[in-house]
Length: 74
Image (cartoon, rainbow, N blue to C red; front, side, top):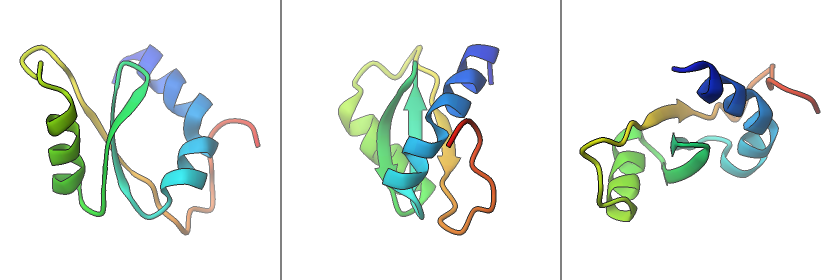
């Protein structure tokens, strides 16, 4: 994960938690592009929306609905 990707994740963690708690998300270039109950479902969702996968790097994140810590500001 690059520094800019890490910074994006910290900035958007509360928003992602509120919206996607209990789900897997796939994000790329500062945008959530896939969501699912499993990592495989989230990947399929992302691939169905993004046709140029050759050079695209996806980051997978499980959003724990019982998380004790949310990164970033509340």
